[in-house]
Amino acid sequence: MNREKTAEAFVEPDGDRRSTEGSTNANKVIPFGIDPEVETCKRRKRKFSKEYKLKILKETDEATNQGQIGQILRREGLYSSTISYWRRQLDAGKLDKKCQDNKDKLIHDLSKKNRKLQRELNQAKLVMEAQKKILQVFESEE
Image 1 (cartoon, helix red, strand yellow):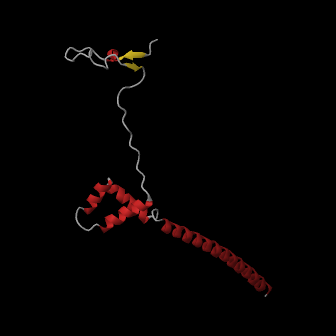
Image 2 (image 1 turned 45 degrees about the vertical axis):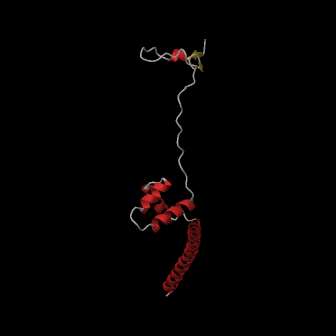
Image 3 (image 1 turned 30 degrees about the vertical axis):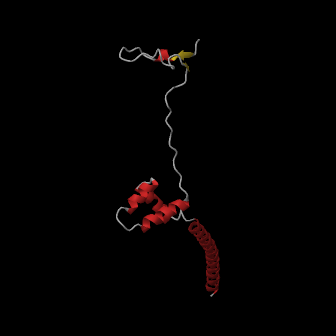
């Protein structure tokens, strides 16, 4: 089976169109299965570093005149919803690594202190139970 077809096989005869007989591409062989159309490029999702996000947030916070934030957004090719999302990330402590490290350390220290206090509470409960039993024994002897 012939897998190659000429360009003429793909062209529909039409009286209004000019002839391709004199064209250099008239007898060009196009391999079967290859699409001669231009492929579209898919855009990749942009990823922004924490430093870039912090820089843009600082710039928008410092914008005082009307239209400055819009100018920054147009210049950087960003949407206002992106800035809002980054602000929520900043408030949650996900953008500042130092802040995140400090929060993690604080959480660790507080959980450690909580475990220590739970142990002390359990010991105090045991002592109180023992004291109650001893008191009951002395009251029953009287």
